[in-house]
Image (cartoon, rainbow, N blue to C red; front, side, top):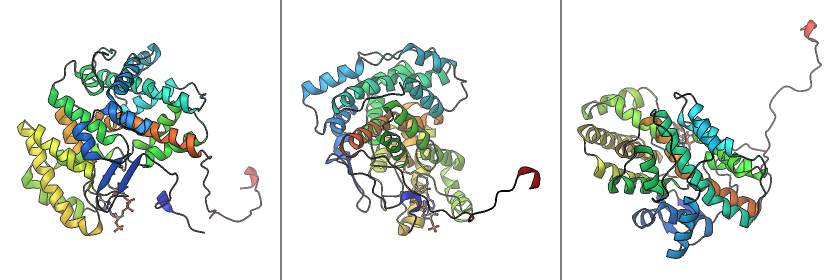
Length: 373
Ligand code: CMC
C-alpha cells in the first residue's frame, strides 16, 4: 500500500471541460485552444461553452448575458455584511464570508436546476468582488450597472470608469483563469460537492484552498519578488542570494502539470508588455523578463518554467488593482470553473470522495487516568 502524497498522478474524475498537455504546454477548454479563446471570445461566451458544452449562437449568448445581468444586484444582507467587515481583512476572507452567507445550506442537485444557478452566481460574483474592492478602498458600495457586459461592468463598479484597453485585459484575464482541470481549489470544491453540499458552500471550500501561496497566492508572491528586486541591475544578485544561495522558491515558477512554459503565462506576458506605460510598470516588466531568463536557465532542465501567475500580477496592477486583490481576481474568474466541475461531477459520476490514510501511530495502549499521568 502506498500513499500518493499531494495526490500526485491520482485521477479523481473524468472531464469534458479542460485538457492540459503539460509537456507540450497546451491548454484547451472543451477542445478550443486558450489562445483562440482569449483572442476571440468574451468571458460570458467561455462560461456558456463550459456549462453547455458548445460555443453559444448570438441569440443564446444574449439570453445568457441577460440572465447574468438580472443578478448583478446583490441581496441586501451581502451588502451589509461586506460593509461591516474590518477593512484590513484579506480580500479572499471577505470573498469566503460573502459566499458562505449566500448558502442556503440545502440544495437540490438536478441538471435543469444546476444550469439555472450558474448565471445567478455569476451575476452575484461581480457585485461581491467589486464591492470587496470598494470596501477596501473606503468607497460607498454599489451594484454593478446591467447596461454593461461582465468585464466592463466589473471594472466600472470597481473604478467608476473603464477604457477599452483595460476592459480587454480584464476579459483576457477572466478567460485565462476560468479553469485548469483539478487544482487544489477545484478538488476542495469537488470534495464538498461529493457530499451533495450546496453550490455556495462548495465555492467557499474552494476559496479556502485557493488562498495559499502555493496555489492562487502565487501571483501576489511573484509580484512582491519583483518589487523586492527594485532594479534590473539587482536581478542577478537577488537571484544568487535568495534562490541559488537562499534556497527560496522562485514564485511564479513551477507547476504540478506543466513541465514547460505555461501557455497562459505567455499571454499574460504579452499583455503586460503592451499595457505597461509608466516608468515603474516598464521597470517591473524588465525585472521580470531578466528574472525569467535566470530562472529558466537554472530550473528549465528540471521542467520548472514560469507559470500563469508569473506575469498576471503585472497585468492586474496595470489594470489598476493593488496587490491584495490579485488572488481574489483569480478566484473571481475561477468561480465558473468550480461550478463547471462540481456540476459535471455530481451529474455524471457523483460518489462520496472519502480517501483513506495509512495509520502510523502507536499500537494499542492501556488508558491512564489524568491523575496518574
Ligand atoms: N523554485 C525553485 N524550485 C522549485 C520550484 C520553484 N518555484 N518549484 C519546484 N521546485 C523544485 C523543488 O524544490 C523540488 O526540488 P527537489 O526535487 O530538488 O527537492 C522539485 O522542484 C519538486 O518540487 P515539488 O514542490 O515537489 O513539486 P510540485 O509539483 O508539488 O510543485 C508547485 C508545484 C507549484 C507547488 C511548485 O512548483 C511551487 O512551489 N512553485 C512556486 C509557487 C507557485 O508559483 N505556484 C503557482 C502554481 S500555478 C497557479 C496555480 O495553480 O495556482
